Length: 59
Figure (cartoon, rainbow, N blue to C red):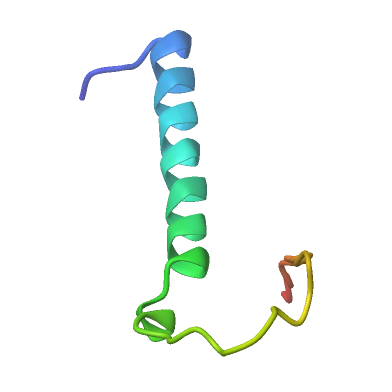
């Protein structure tokens, strides 16, 4: 089995973590459930939306 240098291992680790973080955001913020919604008549109920996102890590 070929041994990796520290720089190669670091590059693989960074690539893995970037893909992992991207996949988490892809799963949480892209949902087929919200597709095909129709706009409600009248003004919007709020001028801005604040989104709080938290991760619960239970052992």
